[in-house]
Length: 252
Image (cartoon, rainbow, N blue to C red; front, side, top):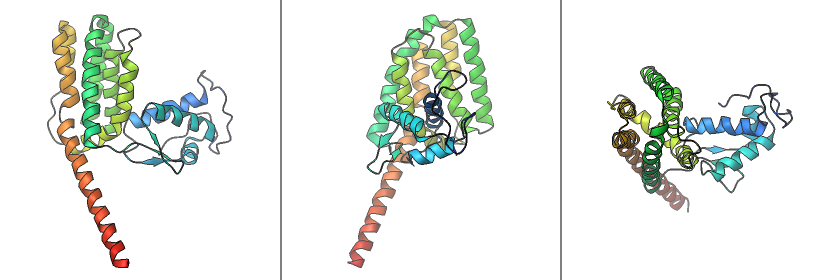
């Protein structure tokens, strides 16, 4: 369930004006939905309606419509014919392409950001990584997803005005809902902490080591499990189609 935004009435009658901290209501709605997608709280193929989201957030339809338009333009959501939007379902081809794009852009972004990572930022990265480990220990997947994104963003955003960061964020929005499913399947399996490798490479100013650590962090476990999940979903869909076809033939 998506929480109502603070300061707005639950009946959705609140004005679509500026929020008290200077952000527009549309921006608040956008950031809330974006956070939900990045944490995987909205699953692949899940449909959403403007009315349902507006009621859940306690706002009117206008800021929700604007937020959905922005998220659709970033390919995090797709429009459906019945005035609904949904998280796009994942295919093997799309999953592999998103992984390849993440590796290509994020290894490059990390290397370009390396000269700008000072001691203060490195200390912040270590604090985030400790929080990631704590979330993993508690099996808090919501927190783990959010903190993992923070860790990567903290590296790439060190380079001022990086043109790669918005592209990377768009990729995360597209893959995060499915990544959460894959991580749930991985639970109980050993996954090496590639964040520590990345931190060691940053400390040593090792560009190649940082690229290797980032690529390994992206690919470890997720690639193999992800492909298995998609193949399983595809088989289930084919079985369902055949079952409906047989029922139709019997009724005919």
